[in-house]
Image (cartoon, rainbow, N blue to C red; front, side):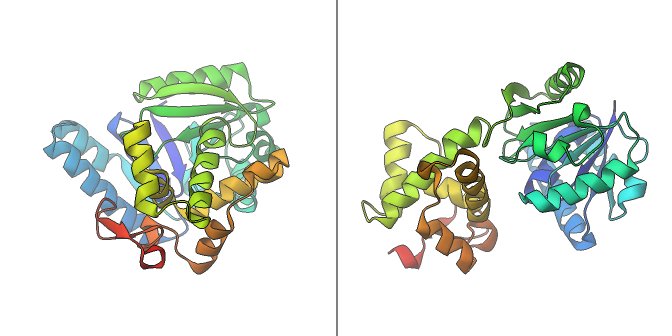
Length: 295
């Protein structure tokens, strides 16, 4: 298999597309917005240029990557002749269900569907298709071209053949696949998001300030990034969505989102992508200083 379709041209979608392109795949990148596709292509081109300058990729990989991508807003024509669809649209159950029902009616019966969901049940999503045995989770980490882990989520009906194939494919694009079963948050976010939520609670309860909380985890626990900075990087709306899935899935108060997180999302302060979360951001997410609301 050398040709796939990636649906969704946000940060994760373009990162997934770039990763496959760098490994000599042809990729159809699909989105409902032509403007989003064009902006994402420019971001990918810049990312590839940086990797070329740092000698992380060769000129041949750079050229092939730009040559082998196609951008489209037409779902039906972009799903012809492919063997794998990777979904990377926003973390919204209803949106994902609607999309999978639509592409299920378009794609050949042997096409594998993979969702990049970070928390939503693979089994539930697969139930909206006629191919639950060919439905699997591929949870990539951000930034996708640099992060080695791919969390492979096996749904209740996912066949062993599909699991083995996706494992092999993941290794073929130089990722490290780890198999987990389909429970809320899987492994990565079941552990990570409660930690982030607890850091937000510590801020909410005035135990310490933004920088102090992050410094404790960086200097004391050897984390590469503090939990509040990481929440901004992930997107506070995404953090909230994942916590809500955990809270509803386990019906346990320990997963209840902190009221401060809820208020910030309602206010539109979503982190790096809006320029303000717990920090204020310049052009680079590392160019940051504590948001005025927390000083």
